[in-house]
Image (tube, rainbow over all chains, first blue to last red; front, side):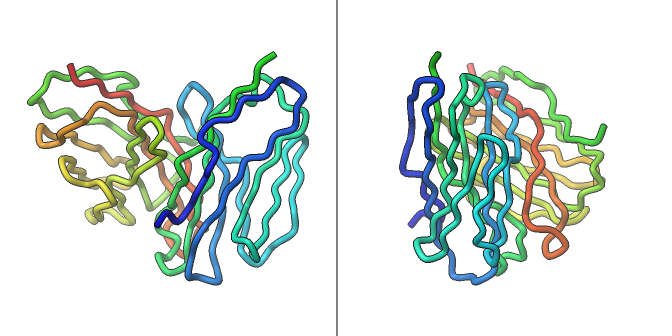
Length: 116
Length: 115
């Protein structure tokens, strides 16, 4: 079974639309970290956010917001008023205590295409 | 500026040849990683190293080899035993284990094409 599931393979929106990228995870630990990374066409993964399992507060950073719900094992990412520059592949990832936080397990990614 | 440098950015190889991808970091991180990315497959872990002269296999280590002789360097060799080596390879580093959170810092990647 996948530990990190991003069910949306590809999403297409028109500029200024809001879009939510889903991430569902599975872990036996009570202490873990969740991440979102952005991969633009250039290829390098860019860190967006890290969330500790004990901190369920939602986070907002400009047009980006994250909704962490332990009850449903989800860590969803919303882009408000999307822009063409948001076009990229977005990865959700999990780091677990049992592994000593030694590796990240990634979802398969969601490709977001924002058209003008 | 601190960061991770991968080279070459693009590489072409004939079947049956070994090829080595370079990864250097100046972030003073103990841990380094190699991931492979294929379309629709996400990132899959090849090898990782938590300390100099030690490394562990990831999920898809067959056909690959690594070395960690220096803290700053973690080269990956794609051997002729790797049946489907055409892919995008990403190197990353992090603060080791419980001292960190698992957050990875990535290089720009190397795209390998087998002709």
